[in-house]
Image (cartoon, rainbow, N blue to C red; front, side):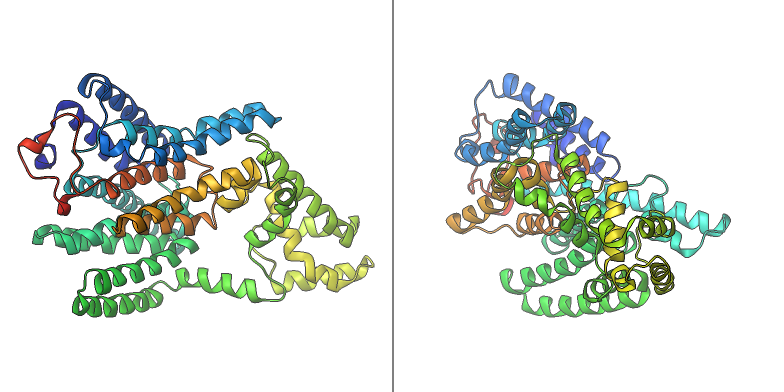
Length: 490
């Protein structure tokens, strides 16, 4: 730990320490992470003024156009305030999304030439430590409840595991998945045997963590992470023998996890079954049917920064009204009494009973059978003000196609630069793929849980990925004392 601060000036030490604290705080509480975000901003401003004396890293400034495009994601929401009706909600959204402005500006103007591979690893290790500690705290609490409070084994899974402090499982899975990549890089990039063992243990703990929290996107992405890591070993690092061994370990590990944790596997198989079944569906598909009208009508500019929730709810209500007309008011009252705001699908007995009720009320039972799941999920979406559960559609609803293009720029710009520079960063690539994959199923930039995590690590990894092999600082740092700027440390 002492070595990573060696040779740094006070503001550089403070900045690195705050980044480590930020990474550590992310799994625990978004508010703690936000305090670290404010501290990082203050530190960066003081560093620019007193340490850099308003001189900036020339290599970082060469990519200022990219940082500005990233920051325009916040700006488009500010522009959306010009045509929004709900000003209070709109300003809350603008405030919430300040991370899209703050982090790109920090990493553009604050000289990051001191940031080496080892220091990036220290930040990654802080994230891993935060994830592991958060998991172990909740796991110990769950074990205590099972042993002494008579809880059943369901206490170890999904939201039941997070009794100490609840964090949505989709976000926890993303944090842990990035942690897996940091651990993996440590296992095959660290020469210290003790460090390798620690990384292996942390890797296994994070795998169990992802399995137990049972996010469907998280489980699927974990398997895809295994595939990416195997490709990286076998084809990019040319370690075919190790890749073959690791491929076998991954396959056996996945098979073992399926046997040991069948409840987690059921999350995936049930979703597939629901999508392909005649009388079942996934709630996200039904929600898309509900809000697609507002999406089609406002695709160009969106409904405005503050009107997204109100317009989405209005679209859900219109969709429900169509279903109400099919059932009739009396049957709607019967269905409402039976489903009682439950989020899971009706079982066969409930469906059969409601079909019998439909006959009594002169309604075609097949109509009830066909649209029952849609009615239930759309009513649940209304009662709980469910958002689009897709960040790309969510962005279009709020600020239109321009906002969507700015969102896609986060993925397109690195791809273009990788092709142009012929340099590829596996860690950054896997991070972007993970974010893009999860954004298909969650509106991850509508809450600080996703905004701070993405904006911080995207800015950090982007800065380190596309600086030259030697990043020349405008102010002399530790370069006089050590060789931290060769390709292996970039």
